[in-house]
Length: 194
Image (cartoon, rainbow, N blue to C red; front, side):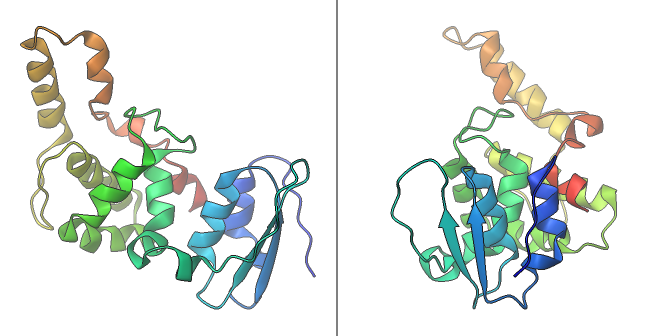
């Protein structure tokens, strides 16, 4: 049995830890954070089971095999969804609930083809940022293709114009606009994991 304790960022520890390699049939996690389970679902194989245990709350212990409980589209892309939406229940970036991110992914086949780039650890930073841009465009409701996608600058401008001419709108609604500068995209957890 391997034992690991996170002193700082548990996300990075889980993603990089050899204890969670596909050779282990069972994983026991003691923790209160849902992020732990999201990351484990993303890195565990179909045969693995997760035994969540809490320290404080009296919750019945369950054996979870995530690949039989969740849809394949979600389990295959859960790390991407987590990286894009952030760690909170509601995304601080767009003020959307996580379900919006899941629905965007499920309803866009072209996006599923592009996300394959995100899963390749040998991809460049620019390629990962491009995948993030395409997802943000789709999240805002604009169509994407594998070859051509509107720029985030244009989408932010359209959000601003729509907000400007709407009498009931205020500047707070602009928070739902995507970030338009590449440096603002560098905070994605996925980039820290690589």
